[in-house]
Image (tube, rainbow, N blue to C red; front, side, top):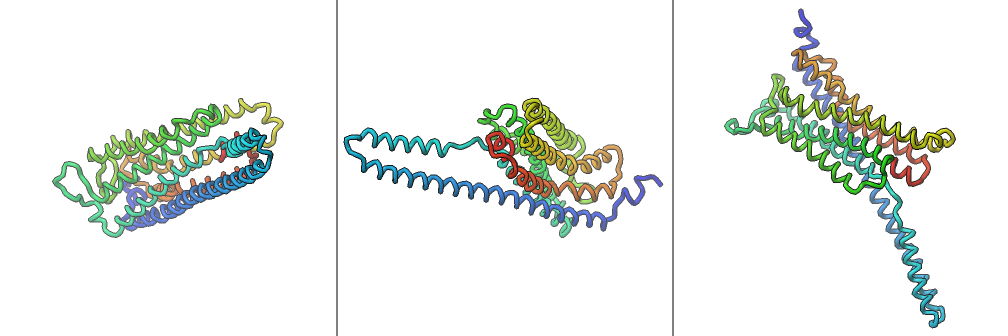
Length: 351
């Protein structure tokens, strides 16, 4: 009996059901992790806003006290009165000067949004499939040129958010490199990142939907036809993995060339070097590990009809759990960042 005819390559309906349930469980963990990252980001923004508002109120009170004191000075020295107010105004400008801050938390926030909705729609899709598999794959109107069913629509939405996580991870790796190489040139980065990370996935999802490239397989699941899957799924995934890896090595090389001498004598800079490397390394490692089983499984499907069940289980554990691991990285690296010296360089790279 060939391997394609063995039980390990032909899972039973019960085994497929266990995979669906496993997918829901891991997606739920990812959903919670992504939600916690989003809440943490919003809470920090609100807390920072309150602190800044409080500081401005304190400065205004100090200026008002300064104005009262200056009004008690001899009226003949009126120029000094206005000078004191002007000086107070200069004090405000100086005290409220905003140090350069990193956009990295915002990028991680965007990545978490993509992770959150990916997990959310996976849970809906798998729950629908388990409860009503027939309705799940039945087209709404067979007469339409473009095929629509719950399975196809949910598959397109999940594809959109998964692709968005690819591109946001890539943008994070580029941004960390950019912050060290040319930190002052950020004017158009965020709009570009948004166009790339939301616009390209949207265009790809629309193409595969409008060309009827999402089909229902024999197991009741929806998948993208092979030519489209290769060009509009694996190619973006491979390119994102490649770009992330390239920027990781470029970042390490640039950092060491910039601070080669200081790294030998400065323990704080060594810690900063370690933190930057760890942060970027962890995001890339999670990205690679979570998607490697999926890549291998689909690569096998190009040459064989075997659905390797152990690999399928691993795939459904790792792929939906990306949001959970990104939350762990966010928590872990922010904990590290608290122990780094508070200067402009660190704020650009870490906070």
